[in-house]
Length: 223
Length: 269
Image (cartoon, rainbow over all chains, first blue to last red; front, side):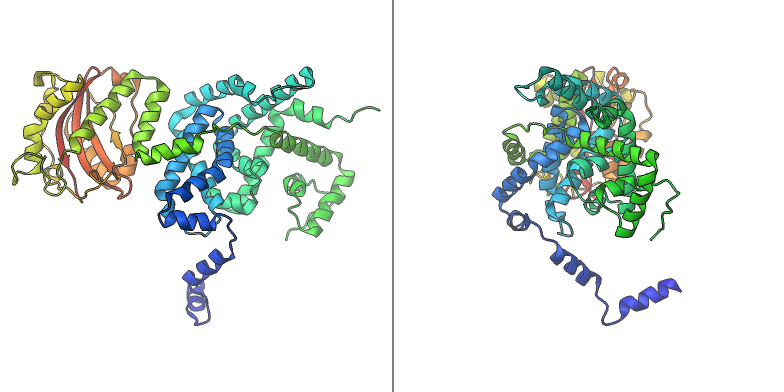
């Protein structure tokens, strides 16, 4: 009965068709990459180069935090852009191009993590500590503070790597990349409610892993 | 909209409270609870501090020529599958994987010499079936591959490969596309190794699996250290990501680290 009712509603003359609804949705999206994507899909390769330059930082940032080391992140980022180039014709503007880029990058990272397996992940986690030095500011004002900061950053990255992949990618997209719940849901292809739940679980797990730093941050300085 | 009573803890709403992602009414109720529940208030502070730690992570430094590197790979027409295997081999610094890659490349060179219109290997008389040509010339091609160090006398080939009879589907396969010649060839997959005496009907089964789900088949490419210590029998797969279909297959074997292409054929649906 329910199915019949839905069918009748859809078949009324005034009901928007699926194509019309999609068209409305597409028109409602304001995408700063719209023009470049148009040019690229029309065969202008220089437009794709410009798209890479626009998105390379965010893709690399996400993948660096996902993979845990620079070499792996760069390799997966290259693969992501190659994949994007290869499958770009599938982008139908139902979301912003940046969301599509994140989706391709997140999938590339998750596939690579699955391919490499846990042994490789352990190696990657070790590399985190080796690479922490690259992230240090060049001239710390207070060496002691800088050392504590570097240690905290290293510990945060390790805690991220210890999260299950599905929680990590959700919390990275939301808390570091600043994507909305809706965007994260589109990137990962899951409902918004699931996104919220994963972010909440990820934050709780991180809080437990980072207890000493969290407690230190919450200490009220005595006057 | 669910109601939150003041006497209930509000832990499952703290993330949303932190982000202001609650309705005004719910926000007010959570706030009222936090005003008198030290446990929940402490948890909110901890969450806030956790998020702050995340957001304070520094921006990783992107290589300056990143876009140029991607552009070079695009210009070179590098395919995804090739890249994945190459990357894996490079990362692993595993000469056995590199040997497998060399074997695949040798097979690729062989496959690209197939005239995709007629299904014949270039330079052979027309009218000969692709399989006949492949069977007749396979060792000759293997000798050419030998120029890169892969030459081995046929006597070293596993008996089961030398006596292998292609399945009906393999025998009747036809060339289906120009994708290899036109540069759409996206790489290759190599099936894990088998002992020389492995029953070859299993290989035929693999071809069936390959034809029914090419992507899943290629994903199965895995070599273990144990594999690398054995002579290998494996189908080499010309895989077109764009078409989502198989274009050609070469069966090759390796003795030690030396690959040798022994059979090739083309496949069409």
